[in-house]
Image (cartoon, rainbow, N blue to C red; front, side):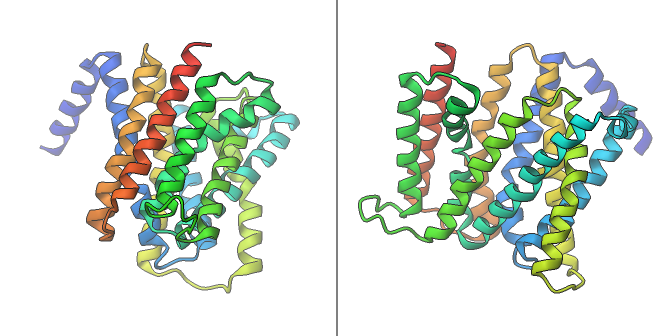
Length: 309
């Protein structure tokens, strides 16, 4: 009975058009991404940020190894050039080590409804850093996008009192914005990586492990995680750091309309607020919604600027 259902499901997916498959993969990634802010906050009730990073990173590395083994590409990870391994050390230092360490610290200090939208400004940060690092020009639409998005940041981080400049938690806001810089730097330097994306990510995670473990041993007392903490780390590692990346790559690989699939990502922050309200019990402030709309408006404005280049 169960085997018949699995066969029917496999046949159904096979009969779908490539665009339908791309949409399915894209929506699956978006749905999982939308739960991550909630998963971070629930997990951080039982684990310190570095503990969550250590255990979730381990689960993610294992998942990526399984995916590569299934694809027949696992051996490629151990046949990289010296240059590729050196690149992976640098990339692994940025992500997952520094990026998630800083981001999880931000989530530890801020309400999820603040940390999650602030993290979405990374695309704006990427445009700014592309000017000196990639020698790209910035059109007026992208400067407008910057102003609009950071007005949204100001509204969210001051809980609707932007002119007071009284932030809910200045350190938390600073860490959330710093994480966007690290994430943007990771993607800029990642453009130099010509390996298969999943192979590259797997090697990056392997190279980051000594940094993560070293920081953990220096800053934490050794202890066994609680069952709740371990389950949270498994969820974060499996979906946020692993499955979402693979699903999104599959969606982009299947589609002939990258822009259409990419626009699905704008569903995620609003759906995330639903999970935050339902599972964390946070009362979503009007300022959060208004600020998020401004950030999304800025990102859309940035896309218009790119299309006109």
